[in-house]
Image 1: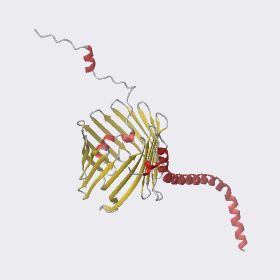
Image 2: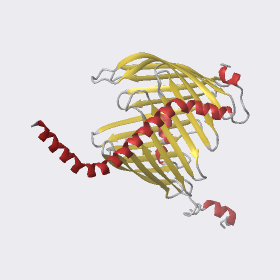
Image 3: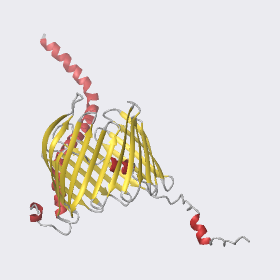
Image 4: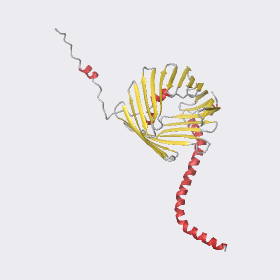
Length: 72
Length: 307
């Protein structure tokens, strides 16, 4: 008796699969963009100031590491 | 017999005549977001409470590091009318890289808040600016990108921000002294949109600016340059949705060794800000703000070392 109930729900899921495929591409896009925004935020948060320091240390005239660390 | 006065020479006659305006050759206007620049600089100095110590160390002509210590009570937003202050102490580390084509500015606090600004000249007329305030708390970070195009006598700007914020503005020089502009913006997350207009009339001696927006804000400002060292400024902010108006009148003395700015408000708030140059690269700052209505008294002092 319980097996009859299981067959009915299977039938419903096969009918519904086609429209859910279209939904999943836009959902995938949204998920991907959210994932990249999150990663970009973390990278900017940790890497922005080191990036400025690297660009500054490579500009002319090149300052030395001791000048970077000393308080004078 | 009446003495005959010789007719004025043609050269003198040319000088007396007003200059003919060439409408095809107008100057480039001020950017739209800086339309109240003189009034803001004179009336809204960076007032603070407590101790402030800034040390800027230049490693290079273009690259510098900055260390800043701020200690004092900071206001915490509260629901009641009383202002709640909590004493805090912060150390902020910053790095600046300033090139004619690229400017990078970063500041990070001990609690992990980063504020970053980037300004890059992509071409001679197109500039990209980015601004971000990042925190460790979720959903409290903001970021904004601006693309500015500068034409011969106009400027346009496109703004993209997080939370689906999109904005555009345009400002045009109409005469050598008058510029008019407008802006539209749309905030996706809050489903709000707005439109605004601004006008600015400036001569050598005075600047008058006005701005009105559909969010209900109307701002008018007037700055008169009384002499080389003294400017007087006044501004009025009116919100026509909430019928709230604030007027302030202030002065700005730019002297050789110091700069003193003071203002009084219609909310019963007076403030003053003094920057005194003690020596080359050493500045002493004093800030005072007395709010008689809210009974909030803020005094601050500090020292700025470096350029």
